[in-house]
Length: 352
Image 1 (cartoon, rainbow, N blue to C red):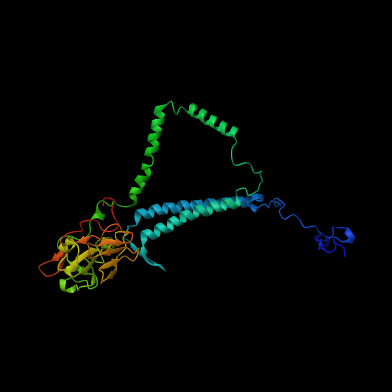
Image 2 (cartoon, helix red, strand yellow):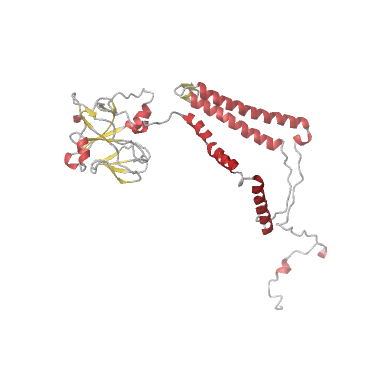
């Protein structure tokens, strides 16, 4: 065997070209060749004017439906009171205002979206065209030309020379965003100073949120954690959720010698201290208490407060201690508040 024949010559294993030795073999095509565009397929609307008119009416109908949805949204916003509750099967009892606003706004947005899609698919041109790809950047000549046109346009506009026009334009552009501010004003009443005050006031009794009875010093044992609300606040009240979100209180009894902060001891009664239940990070309710260390933990982001040392933050993202409520005992032997919290409850205010 020759030296050449001893090697596995790949060319010997290739198929013969067409016509060689009477064979007819198809040569593989280039897999990266440009396939070109498929023949354009005309839609029914392209060749039938009646079908095109029908699609036009459908699109117009969807846009009209959207307009009706917007009008319904405005109408519902005006006629439905905030506190009206209705029964909708199978959802149950829902706010009439929220439900109607959601449905009407969905119809308005769906009408625009569906109309635009139907318009694009049936009436707009769908013929594909090709174009040679050009450079994304501009050459120096083009950039110089655009710069010259910009300078010439500025000169012709008189923007730099006519100060009255320029200044009034600045004023108009500055004032026009106020339109949006006026519209946003109708989102609801201004908060005023409501966030800085709670339902607690001098003489308000501490009501056990489990028994709904006034708390007495003997009801609070050392190491126990009790939750309280202000007297007169009922779950049936229209603003109950708003008020309890600010006034929720946790009561704990410590041994007097375990209290490290003097003001905390002075604001309590016989070792009983009251702190806001609302975390000063993002307003989550605190409910986890460790008796041995007197620490309370927020379950949301693990902010930890030391109730034996003015409820200061010892761990976590909270930026301020829990506000303390000054308490005492009234003539009936019940625990009462001596005023409101000295600082706003919940997430830290900028003025703090």
